[in-house]
Amino acid sequence: MTKDPIKTAKDGTYYFRANLGYDSKGKKIQKYRSGFTTKKEARTEYSKLLLMPPEELAETKEKMNLSIISMKFFFLGIKQK
Image (cartoon, rainbow, N blue to C red; front, side, top):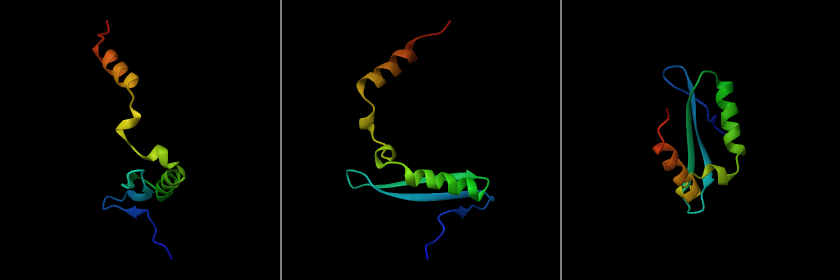
């Protein structure tokens, strides 16, 4: 029998920590979500995380390429009238 991943916080909300495997460098991928008012909401979000492809879960700086970075700096420098 497995434990329920959805836990109850002291303030009555629900939270979970999902272990989603390992990235390409061997680092464990864990996601923590909290503040759900119902257990059903928490379970729905937990299920969505489990079904995501590993490529979307790994948060790496390599995903930001030069064009995105330059656009961010360019648009931040423009003053609006």
